[in-house]
Image (cartoon, rainbow, N blue to C red; front, side, top):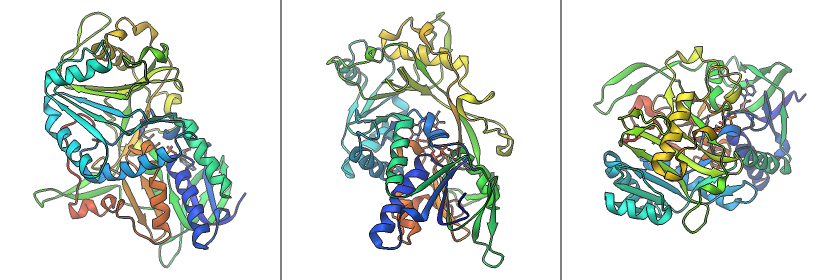
Length: 445
Ligand SMILES: Cc1cc2nc3c(=O)[nH]c(=O)nc-3n(C[C@H](O)[C@H](O)[C@H](O)COP(=O)(O)OP(=O)(O)OC[C@H]3O[C@@H](n4cnc5c(N)ncnc54)[C@H](O)[C@@H]3O)c2cc1C
């Protein structure tokens, strides 16, 4: 049991391990230390949190310029190590109804401006033609635009995290699992953190990095940070006492068919497909109307999951954040797993988009799936330093794709500010420097 370390990272998920690997490299390169100065601890193990159950989708499709630039940076990291991360650079399709056309058009324009390759198709007839050239059974309705990102795609969730762990260990970083952090120790003068209390004893540190995914709520409390925030609105008025954390349930599942069932007309692995439409969604099981409101799904053929994997709109959990039982996490949760209604909706939506999925409801994999995510007040990440030496990586559930954030965090820990992370400071709430909001039905785009 290590009793002290210069750099202590809590969480062996995508952010903790990416930060560890990059910090180790930077310490060595600058002669300031080495990977041996870094300890990563996790109460469970590598990829035990959200990173190990994520769908693994990597996209740039964000309405917020700062998010797009950050994602473009992360995509470079995925591409640089595609093989070890089991990253499939198949691209990404945002297929939308009229209410989103203008927003998505803006995304396209700004992708061009930052050199992120994409194509934008507008109008119902051209969108249908474009999609039918890719899938001859394309049948989604009320679609008036298609944004085709030529970069991005998806990675196999846990294997990428294990690859990051290996990269970190190759640099001399130690990763210890089975250690639960229960509290923080503060310097009586400065208030900086001097270490953490764990179920195996105290660990002292000079720098603490919290990369705890949905458990960030607990570390926020341990650091004695405010449970509510004041946000300056666009009108300049302050909105007080807004909860710092809100939990959402991510609804995902797998259709147990041969992943080969979803190939392009040329027989290739297709881009990740994301459809948002206001066409009535009719049950593929009994012909009933599931919804006449806007709905959205995403899907991809995934050998890692053993079928067609994807999800639909998440839903907010209407409970005080402190009352949410995060453990046991993900599919092990007795409370927060994808519902039978999700399966019915998602498979019917698949059949709506590609008729090859008609009649496949019996093939839906009836095992628990999905998990909760912890969202910030504006649903965008907070990357910031608190109490002088605690770096919080609170990704607001955007984070599997953000594999490059660890590099930027490592840079900031060593004293060099990152322009890409600047728009994600906690102070943006009080200052009213908020990210623009789109017409998407999702809380994160
Ligand atoms: C169902 C689902 C699908 C998703 N799909 C995507 C996607 O397709 N693309 C995308 O970009 N994002 C996706 N996300 C979001 C993404 O998974 C997360 O944003 C990201 O994985 C968070 O990474 P992390 O490293 O911060 O945390 P995690 O991976 O959750 O790791 C946190 C670690 O901290 C450890 N820990 C917690 N508390 C303690 C403690 N007290 N002491 C010690 N250790 C502790 C946990 O055991 C865990 O291993 C999805 C999320 C979910 C739930």
